[in-house]
Image 1 (cartoon, rainbow, N blue to C red):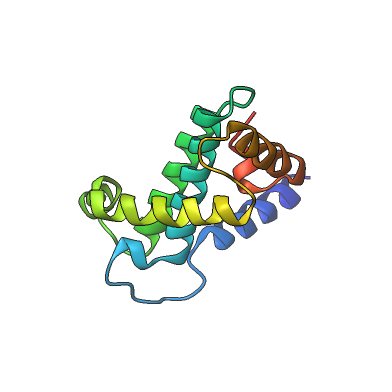
Image 2: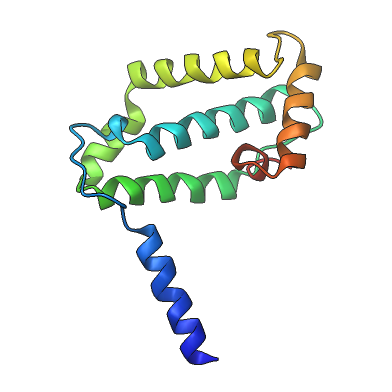
Length: 134
């Protein structure tokens, strides 16, 4: 059993390593990080807009740490990652993408019930957004 667990740990560690040694000029260029930030924005907005759904803050924080580790895996420093996370222009760009996705999913600004429906559907589907909600 120990050997099986050890093998599983090795597989998980390899899976956490970037698949390709791609060079990214900026943290925002890493697809997993960009998509993760959009996912976080969507989960946060659903939790803030829908009165019957809350965001899982600890799980969200852990997800954010995972994204930082992905960026570190591509050689970015903590300062570069922090600068990305605090960049107001980048935040606005990602929020605009998240808003477009809400519209695509049937979300209507000013109508919380539409965001509740999206959140319920995401939770039922077990999506990354849904796992950040309860």
